[in-house]
Length: 407
Ligand SMILES: [Zn+2]
Image 1 (tube, rainbow, N blue to C red):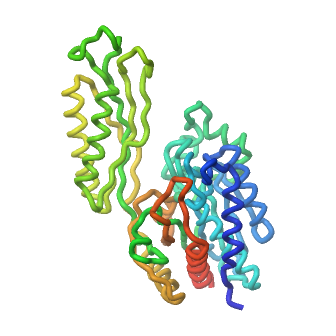
Image 2: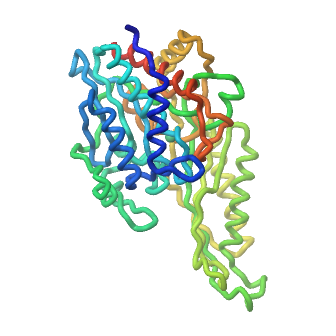
Image 3: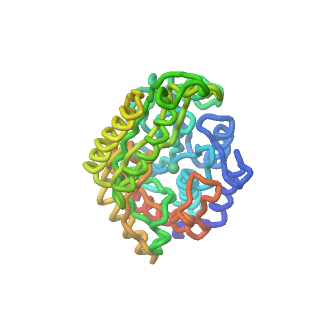
């Protein structure tokens, strides 16, 4: 019996998972290591445990291992993340984890034991909405960040990752470290409009953009909104408003391969009677060609300094993280292409514009990603959607690839 995806079962699992942390508009909110995230993890575990051995590391990454005929052979690993942004949809990350679960279920249905073991992974805090930086679990796993540094990071309420791991019951016993995988695959939604526009069923992700992230601290002087005449102000918030537009202008000038966004703001004293004197802003620049991203950063720095000096405020620009550019494994990309072709699916090569755990895993072992379309390209939004057929096709290509890789 040739293992095949059960489209209804996979769809139902995605819908059942979406019911944890539901938002009024039909999406999901499961911030990393929140009670909702813990419930999602418990449900996932309940589903996977009947045919897997479970291990968890100290940053909460979950590893579900299905044994192979050669139990000591390097495992074929795959998965994604179950956490969401505050305005999350039902598919980002969840699709990759539950498609992986469906791969294991389909193999079980068919009574197939692969030669190499299989490992299904749920990474901790991919989104970075509650604890910065994003992709924290895979970062610590790949030694891109130390466990101690990660545990000490706090959310906006002052709760540390260490406390959140403990209160959510997700602090595992393993020391985070690479697990000697033969290879890594991640299935994910595209989160953009390209596949739908080009009628592609499967996106073969050959690499990622290069992104550079910054925290800006804009400092002026506090004063009274009434008596302080306009010419005497050092208004950090008004200066920041102009900077946000400068970030956008730099991206517009770098199209089609470039993007830039201002995403987060904090303002002091944030009081109605006061001209603001400290404003913090997070922004990023990214481009499919790394050298262009570096050029965008230079442009960004020049415009921010110009705005600051014209508006008589000071600015500190602190880079806090980067990702990519990553080139995924050519042989794995070829395999995914072949498997999509064999199922008569339309496929196209693409570059990932968003951060993914696979970026951190790629230096450790041959890695690749496959995308399925996002309806209207909408993501990080309750309206995020992929059809039951699109979801099933992606999972089937993942299954076909896993069978070939694991023997
Ligand atoms: Zn994701």
